[in-house]
Image (cartoon, rainbow, N blue to C red; front, side, top):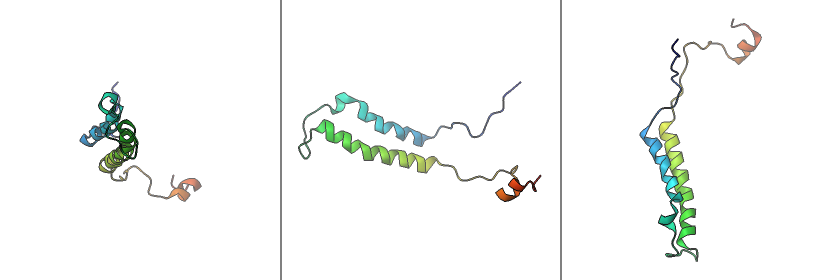
Length: 90
């Protein structure tokens, strides 16, 4: 027997690659430096603080660009929730 393929499964989008940008913060040798200092903080610390809004913007942009438009299923009953609760849409 073959299993049906669901249309709601994972899909690839080029926008998802933008989610890798916040992981650049984890490459410690790139950021392990004392200079330049900003407000007395070494580069290592203030660069991590700077990556927080960068990560938020990346995730928000990917969410915005990959979300689907609402779809209406043709198999859904036409009645509302109240009709379904009362059993009149059988």
